[in-house]
Length: 463
Ligand SMILES: *Cc1c(COP(=O)(O)O)cnc(C)c1O
Image 1 (cartoon, helix red, strand yellow):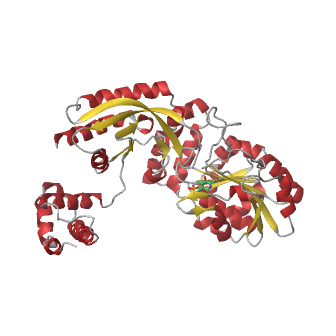
Image 2 (image 1 turned 45 degrees about the horizontal axis):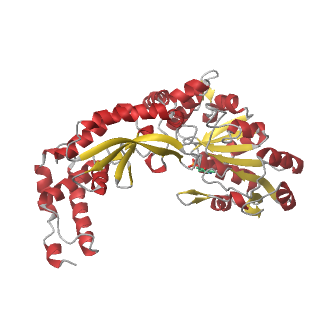
Image 3 (image 1 turned 135 degrees about the vertical axis):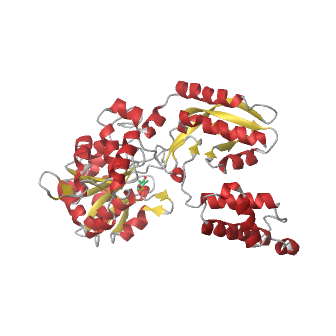
């Protein structure tokens, strides 16, 4: 530990004064500046103690770091996703369609008929809003939305299976990410997990052998984030639904990724199961995310047979898990776009990005390259390179999407330093490093944001 360095850490008051002398601090409230000064010094102290640094940076870098902290407080902000991962779990998953964002704004800034029936002038239910669209798009008898898909599954299991056995295939007991594990949610619901089959093979006889008077449901989970290949056997939702009917137990399908309806070559038979396909196959309850392949807001959609859906909607837990009006507005507006499949692929950003073809992306990357070429001096080499994008969000695993990126080879700094500088800008640019080059996949970047990327390089090459 460098004790002299520790002693010469700036005093909070001194740092605060320097921050306030900087014009960039104008308009930032005093308490925020103070907290940032303290935090910056604490971070430096800890770094000295655990030896991640051994000297103190110069005064101006400390002031800059503190200002950055101050300005990032209230820290949720727009950034540029140049990773090529369309449903990036850490970058907010699905961006909304324009009409969805507008519906959110209108609903947010005024009053609405959220729980009011304008026909009768009496109290209404928020569950009715997306229902008609969900019915027509999936063919279900009834539907409503909750906070997210995890909530949807929790509600389905709690309502239909608490205190009873939920029969699940061992091959489907997945972890979704963010430590969300299907077996844990099952336990939370008060259901008793009855595992059947093996990791790679489960037959309908396994479910049927497990059936007993304590059975509450047959549960199927779409293992949307991985694929088992080779010697495998899983029971289709159709066969499982028929069996559920025979034994008089509901069949709950956690579809996860949320492909709504056939959209070849993305979803549909032979590609990715759809909510419509599952309802048609006879599933009693289908749950899926609103902000994965559906391309809407964070939400969990529950669709299926009326008798089960009504029971779930009436459960006290449904109040705690309910969707808020802004998400509901976004969901409804997104679903409306599905009325026209071709239009949906143009207007719903997730679908537009996933269906963008290689030729279009090649041209698009050429446009970004053109804008960046002016900064190609001794500092950078830019070139277009072929790359692979991913759907992300645990959707469409093992499905490579051929794409194009602008690759940057920095000449005067390391590629890690370039990555860091782009990431720490006011509008962060998030790309990825591949074999000593910095890659910006254009699939996930809106063309209208290209100038922001160019501005980032202009600024960096100045330094
Ligand atoms: C993503 C996913 C979930 C969780 O959905 P959230 O909307 O993130 O709550 C649950 N089950 C499966 C199979 C999933 O893929």
